[in-house]
View 1 (cartoon, rainbow, N blue to C red):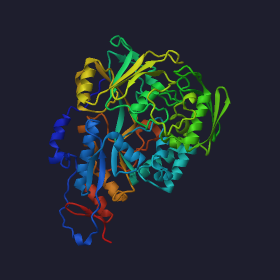
View 2 (tube, helix red, strand yellow):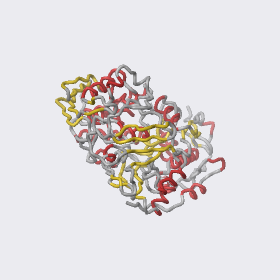
View 3 (spheres, helix red, strand yellow):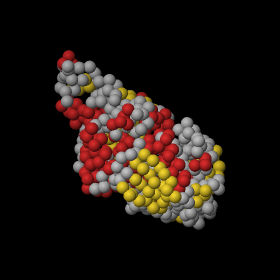
View 4 (cartoon, one colour):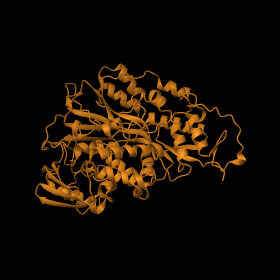
Length: 556
């Protein structure tokens, strides 16, 4: 379908709000952002100036809209009187500095909790993870009540009790601000409607097995291919450690078996999942009955590989699966088709999303005796999924081809990606039909214009699980002050960013859990005013002294 979006020229808007030196200014355009405090402040009665802090930004050519959004927010933070410095980092460096090293001030990116928020909640906010870089709590957030709520939402079998716990989690996140959602990300799938059809709406988006087995090639697609792109080189086809990057997960979904997939209604998909039957004899045990088949090298694929996969998680804990591994006690092959997973603590409704859904099955005959943590790069993977790698020219292109011995029926015969960093080139190829789906669909001028003018393009769209959000490092002064974090949240002009930078594709977000999660979403969390005045008042109410050009700590 074609979506009617705002016709504002984003580049004209950005020219209007671009100040000298390349910093994007929005104080006069953000709606309500006015500094009307003309009162003189006796600086002798104030404490030291607040220290500066960094706001990491991705390169403009990696994600232009997000790059502009960060610059706009940073300028507004400066208008509050806080000293923020924007540092542009190559994407992999930025991600590693935040998630692996916990070394940052502010950082903004997209994240998608998936079919259930339990794993994201547990990784992000468990207090112990704050002291263990790489385990998810890069905010440094530690709170006993939050830990209690995490345990409740993970362990309970009572749906209402779980909803109440997750609602309270959202209230705490909104007020205490270890992170702050800015815009809700819609899952967008722009595609050539003369080449592809049959997309299935799913909260996880359009790049998972559910869509790969349902998409239908049309007459103008004689090679029956999904032809896409990525803006930077692929780095890793390792089934263990794909760093949570979308570019790898999109392909892993076609290359590897997953222990569990869910239907669009978020029920266990018995056909797509490698575990076709899931039983819970008690709250510390999961029993899986598995399909069988062959790996791409002809070796047998069965429940023994599932047992091996979980045993590696227990013994070696690859970083991407550290939260899941933390719940595991044992994995035992009961018979040729059945694996019993033992847990080290009770898990309730959340068990499937914590223990089963995130895990790809690893081939035992390939990985036995190999350390997946030390041996991360896998350029020629043995695959168990619907496709395998035909060829991979690292840094240039990759071609996947369908496996005729896979248990599912599907029509797509391959997935081809070319590495294309230039936005203009991507859209030229799409208009010619060389690319038939926009693999990395972000709101942009090019998407907006094609949506309005290109008859051969349609957009499949659904509310997604994720957000463009601000990560805040609470270990670092002055971000360790709640009033400072709340002042920053007040200063973010969400409505303007949604309309002018994102063409209304992404609406403003306020709660950590999106409306796409139904009853788990709390619509009544604290919201911020998108107001410079409110930002400064928040600081002053807590004793901070706001002068014309800086903010000072309260006098001692």
